[in-house]
Structure formats: structure tokens, C-alpha cells
Image (cartoon, rainbow, N blue to C red; front, side, top):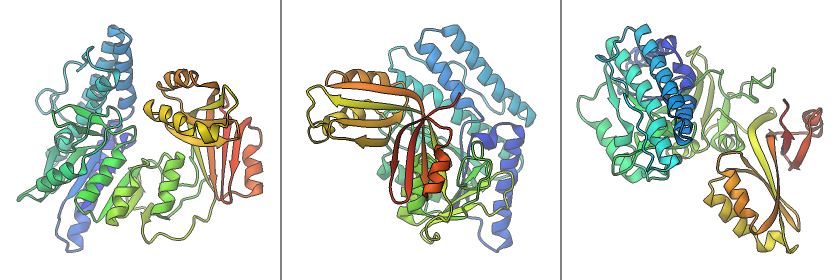
Length: 422
């Protein structure tokens, strides 16, 4: 069997859903043309377009007590999905019943409310895709992943219980007379008591990888709006190069540096079962794209530029000028861990430690706690540029015209914390 994952850009409108059908049919026809048994296709789908961002605004409005604004945003989200349904010939209310009320409870924490509300994006998108494929004559089943992918209740970054999840999912897949195609949500799971959870932003890739691992997939394919894995973001660098083959190790390094083409946790489940990961363009499904596997080629032969936006640089100095690195490192990182900050770079001297982290809503509380122990300064509106395969010439070109707050250089990699340009 194969796993296909379609991101939000792939299903942002009715034509995107029709394209999913075309790609799915190509896969089934290819199996039959090669005299293979059609043993199934797992289709993992993200929320449509920018729905996740819109649902996040609903949560933020409700948390701020702005109920009218939240309701207006909610109506826009429902209208968006209804318009896609009608364009596909589906009937709201009969073919699909969308969520009516916003599942918000002021007694719950912000993060728990986030998971109950934002997870609805994947629920709605997969219902639409599944019903549309079914009405086109395909053999389809819709899976409700919060009942199948068991997690703990670490809201917004739930930890998956693979022992339970793999057994349940494997049993569902291996049963007799299962349809050829299963449509499932990425990004979301559920607790033992039935509450929905999310796996972290861009977590649909991780879902696809887990399913590939649990079901011993032939391959996992992520369908993107780019030709494959490129050496830079084409929205930033005009002259990009396709990287046709990578080793798992290289892919992990790229993902953890901030490459947007895959979720950082995606690779491990696939490497454990030696399942190849393919990254292909949904606009040209016959293109080769990129392949990540055990047998990937040697080191990437071109420099790779990875931008990580919306960073904050925090510098800590001990109040009594003690040796921070020796005496305070564990205390600093305990605070960082408890406030769920994502560290993208660390630099230290005898008396200071600087960390570059994602600028999330948790940062201010972390800084406040750090200031009880250290003298703290910080800079916002920063980006982290990582260059793999750097040379002195490449590094100088990268620095040109930029305000550099911090730089690190090793044998093969350069990292620059730069002020974001307006």
C-alpha cells in the first residue's frame, strides 16, 4: 500500500479537490496496469487553504472575549467550505453536515480550546474529499483519526502512543472487504477519553509518516506546490535547484533547520521501517520530484538556504557574573522547556548564553521567569538563515546588505541571525 498526503494548498478550492481525484486515479490505474493487486491507498488531507490560520483567529477572539468577531470569522470559515462543496456538486446538510456551534468552553485552557476548535479544519476537509471521491465512483472510507491515533493531552503538541495507535490502525486496515481508498485527517489525534488533540503545526506530514510506519507502506508521498525538495525557498531565492535524492540524515538536518518542505518529526518513523519518502508537485503528478531513502546519494552537491522566520534572540547574563555555561545551563533550559520554546540556535561565552527561539505567545512568560535569575536582553523581528554547504564566497554574498545580530560557522554550515527587512 501507499500513503499520499495532500497539504492545504493542494485542496484550497474545488479544482484542488478534483486534482486529488486525478492523482488518486493515476495511482490505482498504475497498480492495475502493472498487474499488481490494488491493495489500497491511504490519503491524508490537511485543512483547506488557510483554514487553520482562520480557526486560530477564532480561538484568539474567544480568548479575548470578542465573541462577535469570533462568530463572524466562524461564519466565513463555514461559508468557504460550503462554497467548495457546491462547486463540487455536493449538498450541504445532506451529503455533509458541517460543525454548527463553535466548541469553545471558557473553563478549558487556551491550548485545549485550541485543539478542540482548530482540529475541525481537518475534519471538514476530509469529509468533503471523501464524499466527493465516493460520488465519483471510487471505493472510499472516511476515518476519524481522533478515535484511532491515540495521544496524551499535551495540547497543541500531543505525544502519540504508537503501541495503541498502531494496533488499532492496523486492525482497521487489515479487515476484510476494506475499501480501496481511506481518507484520513493529518495533524490531529485524540485522547483516551475522546478529546481531540493536535500534533503541532505542519503535523500532517508526521501523521502520514506514522501511518506509513504502522502499515508497512511501500512509500509515503507528500504532494506540494513545488517541484520537490529545493535548495532554497522559491519565494525568497529566484534561482532554485531541485534536489532529486537525499539520505534520511540530510532530510532530518534540513527539517530541523527550519526547511518548510516537511515536519521535523516526519523522518524517524519512515527511517525505522525503511519507507521511502517522496516529495512531488501536485500540479504535475508524473514528475519525478525528490526521494528520501536509505539509498539516497552522497552529500547534497549544492548549497542549501533555509530561512526560519519570526525569531527572537534572548541573551542571558548571570547577575553575579558567575560562569553561566558551567553553573546555569540546566536551569536556563529547564525554563525554556517548561515554556515550550523551540530553540533554533545556541551560542555561549564565559558569562552569557544566547538562544534564538521561535517567537510564540509563550516567550514573554519565559523571559519574565528568566529575569528572576539572570540579566536578560532580547531582540525581536529576526530571521535565522542556515546555509548548508557554505563557502567563504557564499557566506559573504549571504551577508551583503543584511544586519547581522549573530553568526556561527562550522566546516559545512553557516547560521546567521539577521534583522527582518521591512
